[in-house]
Amino acid sequence: MPENTVTTPLAPMEPEDVADAFTYIRAMQAGDIDTACAIADDTGPELHRLLLDVAARVFIPVTAVDDHDGEPCAHAFLAAALGQLLLDTLSHADGTCLAFPPGIAQTIIRFTETILTDDHGDADVLRQLEAAGMKQAMEARPITA
Image (cartoon, rainbow, N blue to C red; front, top):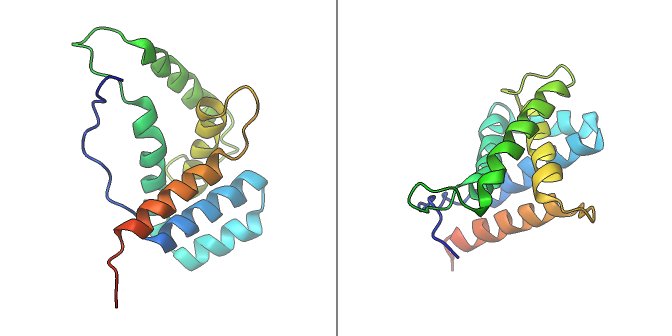
């Protein structure tokens, strides 16, 4: 497999941050506005950064182009798919600004549903991403005696 152009791994998130961000995202996906608002109230302005951290962990590995000396590669279709996804997200943003938590969460949801979910309807992609983020966060925590 070719080397990916993204060589610097993202710093792990705190486990509580992973849990809060994905609880918010799943609440938005389910249309559970009460839970989403409760998470937003508890997290405060920090929610914006948490959702951007999750978005980076979802988007960057998938959209990074393999280094083939500037030649198109097998993953070049992702640019077109990502462009279509962003247009779709803008068209279906339900009045939310994409720069705020609801818009960021909806963008993550649509990205996972459009790009990361196969034709068989694997609805557990967000749970898999959350589990991977939580594992990374727990492994990065210092062991206390």
